[in-house]
Length: 276
Image 1: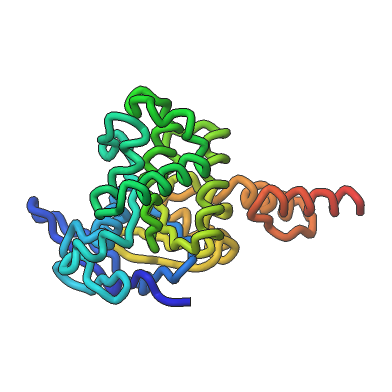
Image 2: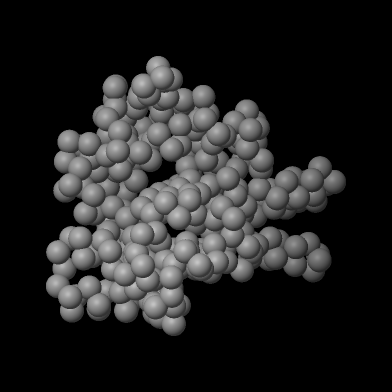
C-alpha cells in the first residue's frame, strides 16, 4: 500500500498575520485508505486541506502528494485529486448536470467519446442519469452534492478530498452518500480524506481518524482507538459518538459490554445482553 499524502508539521501565516498550524503527529494517507479529520472550528482542518490541494504554500513544514509538492507542481497534482467543497454551489458551474459532471474530464483533454463514457458511468453510480438535462442550481442539496461528487470522480482521481460532505443532508441522503463513498473506495481504491462535524458517521467512513486541536494533531488511530480517548475528545470540544456514550452508561450500571462503534455492533451486543 503506497503513501499518497504526507504532511509534516505544517505552519501557515495568512495575510492578516493569523498563524495556523497542524503539527504534532505526522499526517499520512495511504492508497485506498479512508481518513477522517476531526476538530473544532479554527483547529486548522481547512488550512490542512488547502495545503494538500496546493492552494496554499506552507511557511514551515512539508506537504507532499504522491511525493510531489502540491503547491510547486499544482497542475500535475491537481489531476490526481478530486475535491468537493462544503458549499457545493461554489463549484457547480455547468449549465446542465451532464456538463457539470463532464467539466473536469473535458478540461483535462479527454475525447468526446471518453467524456461521455465517464459521465454515463457516474450517472449510473450516483443515480443522476435522469437529471442530466436539469439545471444543477435548481436541484436539492443532496442532489447537488451528488453532482459535485460525480464530477470530482469522473477522471478517476487517486485522492478524493471532502470538506463537510454531510453538512445539510437529511438522514436518507447521508446514508446514500456513505454507501457511494464506500463503493468508490472499494471499487476504485480511491484514497478519501474527509472533514466532518458529524461524529456518529465517522465509523462508517473512516479507517483512520486524526484529531486536531489548537494547531496540533493530538491523536490518531482507528475509530475504536480514538473514540475511547474521551478526555482528548472533550478537550477538543468534540462529543463522543452516541453509541459510545450509551454503552459507557451501561458499563456504569454494571453491565459487562464492549463499546460498539457501528449500529450492527451495537445490535449484536444488545442481543447478547438479552440472551444472557
